[in-house]
Amino acid sequence: MKRVLIVTASFGEGHNTAAKNIRDAIVSENPDCDVRISDLYAVTNPRLNRVMCAGYRVAINRATHLWHVVFKLFDQPGAIEKTLPLVAKMRDAFGRLAEEFKPHLVVSTYP
Image (tube, rainbow, N blue to C red; front, side, top):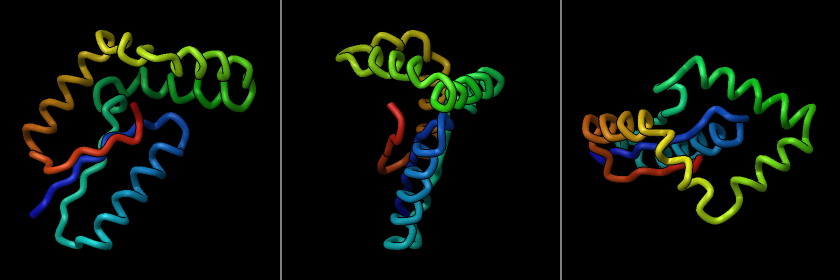
């Protein structure tokens, strides 16, 4: 049986919707495929994740100028890579999940 791991993030519903639609498409074409969706932000730090999600909702609904600035900062080449030392817990959680689930394919709907 093939296994697919989809990693996503709860910031807004776009990433989750994409993950669910990818899962549904894979399973509709390959009913025996085992597809797992995981939000590593929620898994590794659920309290901070809730705060970040709430902040994201406020930014996109009430402070669009702030969200525009943040988006532009992270849209620069290398910006995401600079945050990697801060996400060591997620990297380790991904490693454990990959070791346990042994996916044939990993799909990310969030950087």
